[in-house]
Length: 169
Image (cartoon, rainbow, N blue to C red; front, side, top):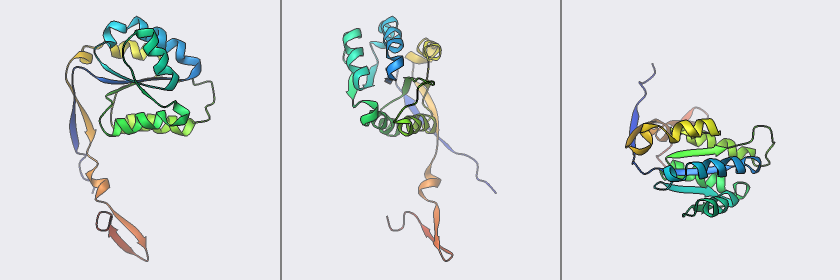
């Protein structure tokens, strides 16, 4: 019999921690969107990968927390910040028509956003709806699945032996 799903609440403060990412063919779209929404973005804590961060700082004229370029680990840095509750919101203008050499990193980033239940905007329309939401400037309790079961699961080591995964780690 399955156990009922448990959730934990993670409170997002009124000033959100927003990651801004764009593939090369979508950087202009993200820059135009950010410039149009400059006033709304100004009081939030912004993070961006590589050249996107540099271009955003120049365009918006305020500080952007700049990480590595996506292919050099920036996507993974943002994913890690999501896991550590250092990113509340992901705006990722990705190009669905262009193959990416770092596609596994992109998929991992999107997977982390879904696992940790943070809002994701993948195009201008979804970013417009999210940035203009009344929830954007208020506290918000997002529900995240309680993953304690995953940390305390037993794994089969072979020959029918089970081991508590936390017993010897």
